[in-house]
View 1 (cartoon, rainbow, N blue to C red):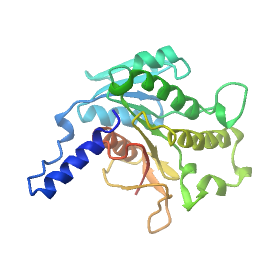
View 2 (view 1 turned 180 degrees about the vertical axis):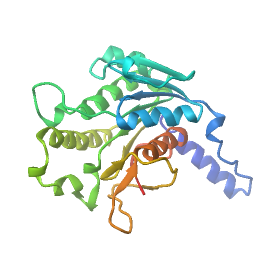
View 3 (view 1 turned 90 degrees about the horizontal axis):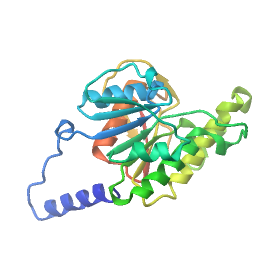
Length: 253
C-alpha cells in the first residue's frame, strides 16, 4: 500500500550513509505476486498475462467472456468481470497485490470523453481500492501515447489532425487524458500510469527498452515504438519493483 516503496528507499539510503552493506534487490522469482489483469484478452493484456506467468506470479485474468481466455496454466484463473459493476470489481480486487488495467472503448450513447472506458475504469477501481484501505493492491493503469508531451505542456494528441481520427478514437484519447488527470489527484491509493509510445508492434520480446516520464520518446531515427511483448515486460517489472508509485512512466525503445 502507499508508502512501502519510498520507505524501503529511505532505509537503503540510511544504510549506505552509515557504511552498512545495502541488501541486493530481491529477485523477481523470489516472491509470487497475486496480479489481476483487466483486459486480459486484449493485445497488451495477453502479453501481460504470459509475462507474469512466466515469472511465477499468480494471475487472475478478467474478461466479460472468460471463455475467450485461451491461455492455460496452473497459476492462471480466468474469470468473468465487469468494470462497470462495482460489486464485481470489489470481489476481484480483494486480496490481490497488483491490479493492471489495460482496456479501451467508449461506453453508452453519451459520446463524451467521460464515457471512455479508460476513464470510467480507473475511477471505479480506485473507489474500490479505497474501500479496502491500507491492504489494497497497487494499481497500474495502461494509458495512451496521446497523453505524452512533444514539448513541455504540449500533448502529442493535440498534434494529431482531427480529420484523421475516427470520433471513437478521439474520445478514447481524451478519456486517457482525463484518467491521468484524475490519478494525479489520488494520494490514498498506490497507482502508476504506464504509457506506450506512438507505435506498438507484434515483434518478439527483447527485454531491452528505455523508461521515461512525460515526454514522448523517440529513437535516433525519430521512431517512437515498442513491441507489445516488451511493453508487458515493463508492466510486470513495475508490478514487482514499484518504482513509479504515484507517477506516470513511459516505455519505448
